[in-house]
Length: 312
Image (cartoon, rainbow, N blue to C red):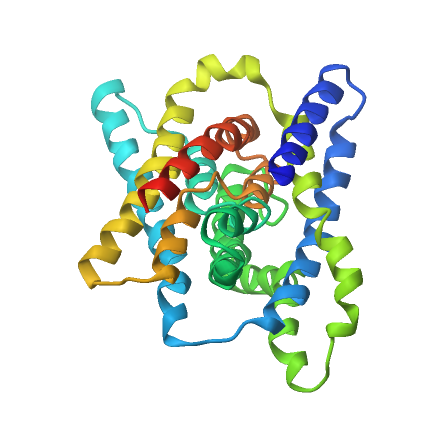
């Protein structure tokens, strides 16, 4: 509960400081830089070395991939329906912003504590694995998708002509600080014990979600909710209801059972992954839509996730 209170405080403070113009665009970029360059790498260095693989970990590892694929299909179908009923496609920036914002869950700051609360500390390792796979998808698929769209729309810094080379994508992924930290955390523990750094990493990692939510609050324009209510509603429909239902259905079809499966479904019901929406905003892909889905989803998701826990 304390994590949820911290999230609400950071969100409200962000909204208020933006309302009174205390923090400008450069301030937002500075906050985002801390998240991407310090807090997220600390998260990987802290948790990845402690992961232990077993057959029971397979479903928690695969469920974020299934959810991401479902989000891609959902956005495509939504775009087709929009063309049929409104006579036009979503612009590519909005389509990408919607996709990356609903494709991944906030499995860390919200998901891990809620897993501990509803399923016990003994099952938190499933949530940690789910979170790290989500993080890997964010650092690769999320980053590449956002970069490609930003290049096409001219809001990115790589190529305003609408083209992006595989070499540029590969270089950006390999030099993305969270991805570097993830790979480092996989390799170094085989040669050295980095657990002595855990107290420091805990402190740095703890800043991630408060800073990220604060940034969302700075960009959250509730006045824009009316003009974006259709897309926000659609995004939250998938993220809070259809995504966990999809993972639940897959579990039934393949006969997956046990605590790992329950935690995977529960993690899928969390609100949107905060940092991937920040990434989309950083590249100028409909920041208002991203912040609205995340901001409204944090509050609504606390209720819907609790209901999913009761169902499970």
